[in-house]
Image 1 (cartoon, rainbow, N blue to C red):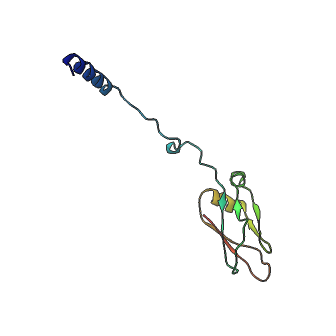
Image 2: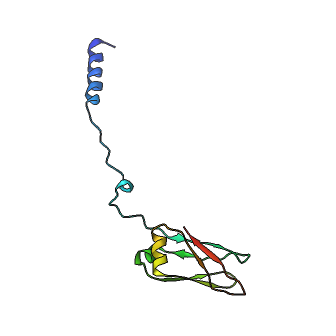
Image 3: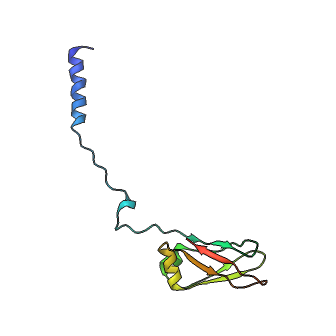
Length: 112
């Protein structure tokens, strides 16, 4: 490499060294940014078998009203959540409720 070519390439490197780079904060890092809206699935235990349907949707959490859920399977149970409990679930707090009785048993449903 000739001296002239070397100096030209060295000049390009020094020019890049003067460039400042700034990275804006991510959306998740902004404390004013709204929380991500996600459904909250409850864990159903007890009764010796499982059920599906213990989900408080993001829309239900945002509405912050009372919610009635139906646990599905070979038979059904209902789970009643007060507006206060739905708000607690939306805040990420743990909420534990009992289902209605069907077939002589209930289930415990735990959110968060």
